[in-house]
Amino acid sequence: MGLLKRRTSREAEIPTASMADIAFLLLIFFLVTTTIDVDTGIYMELPPPLDENTPPPEIPDRNILTVLVNSQGDVLLEKEFVQINDIRPSVKRFVANRGADPTLSDSPGKAIVSFKTERQSKYEQYVKVLDEIKMGFNELRSEEARARGFRDYADYRARLPEGAEDEISAEYPYRISIAEPDATNPSAEGTGA
Amino acid sequence: MSVHFKKKARAKQEIPTASLPDIIFMLLIFFMVTTVLREVDLKVRVQLPDAEAIQKIEQKRLVSYVYIGPEKLAGNQLGENRVQIDDALIPVMTEIRQILFRRLQDEPRTIISLRVDEESETGILYDVQQELREAGTLRINYSTKRLSPS
Image 1 (cartoon, chains in turn green, brown):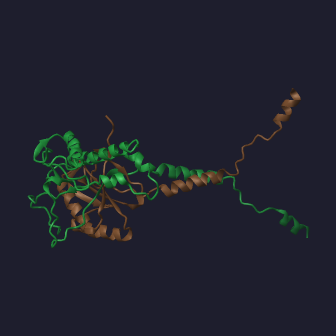
Image 2 (spheres, helix red, strand yellow):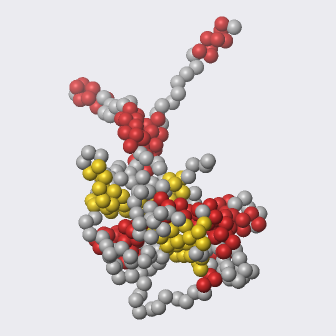
Image 3 (cartoon, one colour):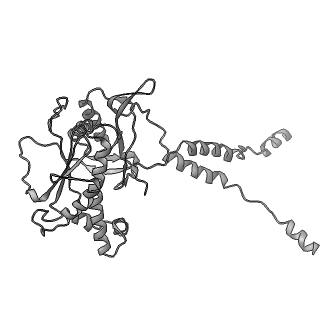
């Protein structure tokens, strides 16, 4: 009887003092293995594959700004040789023309920048030119945001109420067309488009 | 004075550590959730170019990577430009279409991040982009580094 009583009075407990240490070890492991680098880059949307039966839409020449890059990295903008730094102001002038100059675009919504490189062009040059074109659009958006009393376009986006339409991006949509290079390279595979 | 001092010293001078494991567990769970353990074994060299007009991709779970660059050969040699998806080099271009089409079925909001070596030619990039269009994965991202302000 006495023996039984002694038994029940003993408390059955799991020692939890080392719990924190175990958790710490796991924590350190995950801290070391975690990489919190966010992928950054130039976001684009590709056009859907072309239907061979429908002809390409007719676009008046004034609404297209052609940018060509050859294999040496030289840039042709509307058939004129330019430096990379000249692309951004030209894109801005072209997009924000609003019908003023008959050789430039009707409206920002209709303006298309057509970008084409040769198959032998370096990817570095490709990104540089694409970056300049996109920065042209971004600067126009920021100018518009400043006119509306914001610091820049990112500020406008941050303060945009939930569910509200982004008027500036609707005003200056990214209309960049990445054209296929001419099939001068015999190794180019025909992929149906 | 001495009486006063003694009374103070008798007070309990301990930081309560009972909630410490809970705090640590919270941190632990955060890091477990954010960790991506699978690192891809790169079979091609990828040196990303710099750019200014860049955006961040917040939803890392949606991103599928396509690597393009010169193949790494034994003894620091570089070979032909190849395409790598996940852990494998793609032998035939048209396979990209099938792989990415299946991925799009699993996750319709997939973003393809193109990690292309800056030295590679754009011809292979156009071929890959044709495949992406056929697969229907139209949201792409040219992965670049942030241009350091000069």
